[in-house]
Image 1 (tube, rainbow, N blue to C red):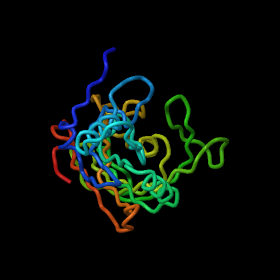
Image 2 (image 1 turned 180 degrees about the vertical axis):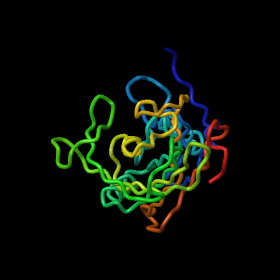
Image 3 (image 1 turned 90 degrees about the vertical axis):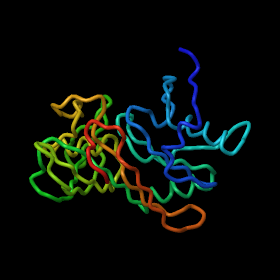
Length: 230
């Protein structure tokens, strides 16, 4: 496998927010957030190349993902450009002083138009499994959803993610009989190259200015399922 080439100028249309402390990008589906050790392309290395070119920097460049989204998922990924920003944002996430909103196209329709879902999840064999409350190794997972609209036999739902467990949204929506479109791992019957899950909105406090910031990411373009705008 040859060396991966990242072109900084190609990242520009995906940048949602940038200053001396933060960089937020709209990650395409089927791209890793960080290097997984496989040598595959990833967003963090691409963003680091953009910083190198845009700021005319040499040597090591500090850039770390504040959070990750699955390879198959599109939408907002936030990077810290300083150690101070990383530390403060990590603490805000631990204290749940941020808001993460996802949009998903699911098969079928939830029985309740809006509800809170609470499950206990186990992370096993690259999959999240529903467990009993308090089961060994199980973690409490909480999200709230509301149905935005019906689209044929599918539904567009908005998810307010309270906890950030492995494959949480995918497993919890599947548990109520509404797997995400294209997510065959969790029981979807529709076949796609990726899954219809998008990190659409992120609300944080700026790590140095201590002012609220709202970051929004448009749906992927072109797309074979997002036929409407945020």
